[in-house]
Image 1 (spheres, one colour):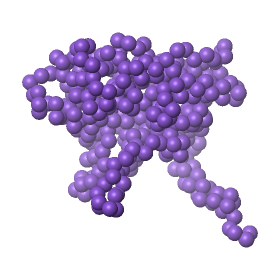
Image 2 (cartoon, rainbow, N blue to C red):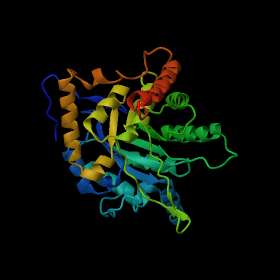
Image 3 (cartoon, rainbow, N blue to C red):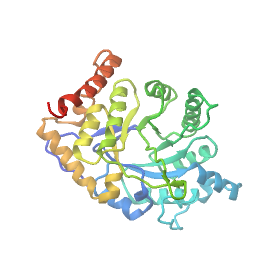
Image 4 (cartoon, helix red, strand yellow):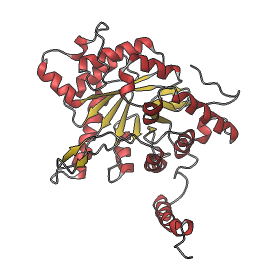
Length: 341
């Protein structure tokens, strides 16, 4: 569907070399494993859809089972994949991607999730052949080895991105965790090796501890708007200092969340938890109310709003950050005076 806006209102935004009709992208989620849900996302007005991830572990397991079969040799449109996003074999993932591309007109961004280059090269090429408009590399890694320093962790990420960029011609975005010591430096190095965008951030799904069994209790916690603050901070720092596209993923639940994201400098916002809670139709309302906010505040384009609250142009960014930190701490006393005062 097309999102109606007042004459003169320009909601378009660039992302990964694509021109999208507005900043709202359906992020990677189980919804993309179901063709009907994909079509509902398109009907609700999604500017683009990020496919659920193909995991490194799935690739390596499949390679051991069928070592002599190239992934592109298994692409067909005859086998219907299972509905579970995480039950798809690599071949079924490619089949599903091809089927989705045949049925929808909006851009489809495939996703690879892992930490090493092994197996990714051939599947990145197969994903491109299946018609993906771009590729998102979800680099999810938690450091557990005291013998591996931060430089080694970052270099492995850079090596993976470099290998993939050399193997495909479609745009490549890198989805990062928030746990890097110097995000601006890492972003600059990703920019130098040709990454087309950064997605901030993937979520740390830590398992809880079950006191009765002394074991772990894995459970997905959907995000809420409070998750947005960390992402606004990171995008605000990077905006104006990189040529890459910037996407916020996590914490966008209300139209005002998207307003803040674009103000910080984001080109797009990826919506996931809100769609899992409320269904694909939630997108339509988000876009309409976001557009209404722009009109009410006299912005005639998303481009005019982008970056107005970033750190670009604020002078000494480190001093500004320190001042903000101190001000936040001091605000508690002003807002919540001690009892009896």
